[in-house]
Image (cartoon, rainbow, N blue to C red; front, side, top):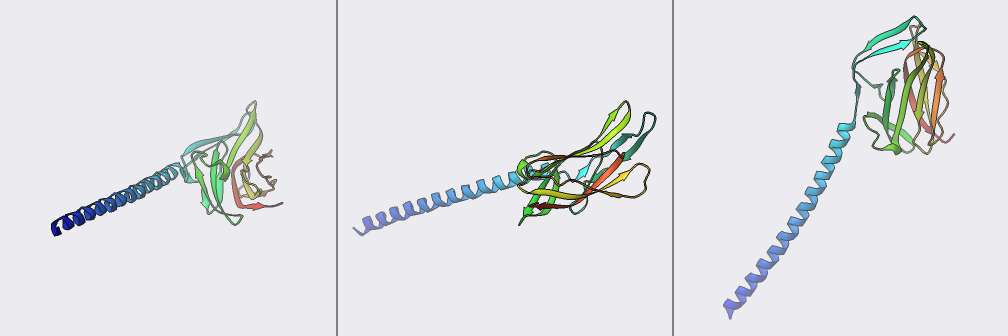
Length: 196
């Protein structure tokens, strides 16, 4: 009888161990799956970030005879924290981190994977008959608040940056800023979200 009780006890103990081992395996599988998902998200986001522009030849039309040409080296898009430099011909997606209605971080991304928090910019020169018609900056505001920023331009014939006025971008809209000046580069800074 004692032998049978001992065998029954051993059988119960083994069964309990198997249940515990099965539960441990299930928990381990869940943690492993979560870990793989987190690593995948991190790798995807890391691969999508684009901190530097590739080098390229910038050519800007001035008039029917003259044009400006410069080799732009591989440089960061953000020359300082949240201070963006953009050249004609560039189209840039800027993913934004917001905390308490303030922009706390910005990064350029290759693809617009999060349109609800990505500002899309395009800076181009419109040319007609080899002559500059205008420079145009297009900015899409994906946010529920008005987007403002300060702009500075470096134009042909000047040796310093010049401040220029911009129109605040209303929520969920696209603005088109146009200048008759021949702009070689723009710097955009002091990005803010407002209720105005």
